[in-house]
Structures are given as C-alpha cells and as structure tokens.
Image 1 (spheres, rainbow, N blue to C red):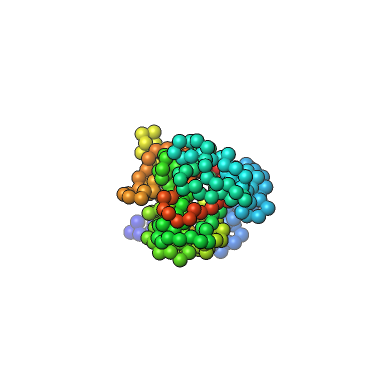
Image 2 (tube, rainbow, N blue to C red; image 1 turned 45 degrees about the vertical axis):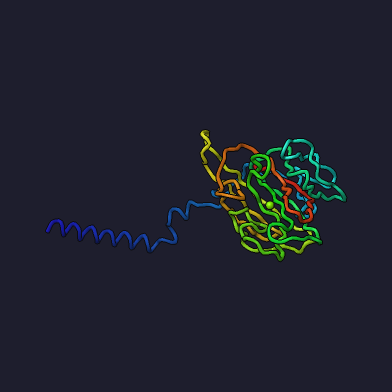
Length: 267
Ligand code: MG
C-alpha cells in the first residue's frame, strides 16, 4: 500500500509539473530563450580572395596554367622526362602518337582541373579505336600506369560503357552521355581527391573523383577502386604526389587535340 500511495503521489506531482511546464512552454523554454543568431556565426578564417576567369572556362587567378596555347613548358615525355614532343599550333595542342604519353613536370595531390579536347571532324575507326586518348588524374609510372579518365569519340560509337568518354576506365560508367559531335570542342571539369596511404603502403582512404563533361555531371564523387587497368583488376599502389598525364593511344585513328588546360591545387 505504501508503495502504491507513493506512486500515486509521484504521478500526481508529475502531472502537476508537466501541466505547468507545457502550459507556459512558449514563454519559458530555456534553450529558445538563450539561443541567439550570433551563436552559429563563424567569422574566421576568412576565405582567400580568388579572381575568377573572364568566363567559367578561363583560369581563375590561383590556377596553374598547364597549356595556354603557346608552348609545352609544363610538359615532358612520360617515358623519359625529355621535352614533350606533341604539336602546338594555332593555340591548340595535338597528340603526336609516335612520341607517346606526355605528363606534367609538376606533381599534384588534390586538385580541380579544367581541360578541353576535340575529336577531329574526319575521325575514323570504331569502338576503342576512334579518337582514344585519356586524362590520367595521377600518373604513377610510364605508359598507362595511373588513374585514367577516358577520352574517346562516344558521340555515336558503341563500346563497353565503362570505357566510353567520361568513364573512369573499366571502373566507373558515366552517369549520362553528353558527348558533342566530332569537330566540336568539349570539356572536362574534374575534382580529384587523391588516395591516402599508410606508411606500410596499405590504403588509408581511397581516391574520389567528380567529373563534369560539357558542364554535365558524369562522375559524382566516384570512389576509385585503384589504378585503372586495360587487363585485370584495379589495385592501389602507394604514391605521394603524381604528375597529370595525357595519353597518346596506339590506335590508327586521327589524333585528337587539346586546349585551355589549367589546374588548382587543393592541398
Ligand atoms: Mg584512353
């Protein structure tokens, strides 16, 4: 009986208190009374001022211009680091297939990159042998070692979908196909988050890549499975900072061209 009575009184008191609290809630809620707009304002650090380009394709003030139409000073042969021997004419860079891949002199970790490329109007060939090139987001060795964002004529050209333009080669199928016709300039805007490795070479965090193709999202924070490979499974291999590389693909189709290449280091 004693316990029951205590419980009864406790319940009665609870009802009384809760009634009075709820009745006055709009006026007396402590957190609402204490919170101010200023509590959630952050004033520092102030973001650095960057002057944007004259249009969204032009390099902003903090970009490293990798190709401005004039020379290949920022590029070397991926094979032997000798001066790059691709063709520069009329503000345009054209692949020299006989000279092999070219890579940046500088190395990068995380970055934002803009590049424009054009499949020649008279392109021939089919599948992977039609305007094939590639942007290696990190080059981890000569040849095709690294992480390739595929470049190909995929306007009207059937191939495996994880190898069409906008794919992370043999890993990430583009979300859509926004290709322009051969003869028209196209663009990639890329955000690359480099993988992080432990001291023993094991993977700590994977690479992520976001790609806008002609302004259309085709890779949305895609988690890389490792280096892209023509044959076999992708894998991660420890690297710190890496050049960016352009592919001279061995197919016999007409060489493609590039222009307006710039990068903003993000680390
Ligand atoms: Mg390729």
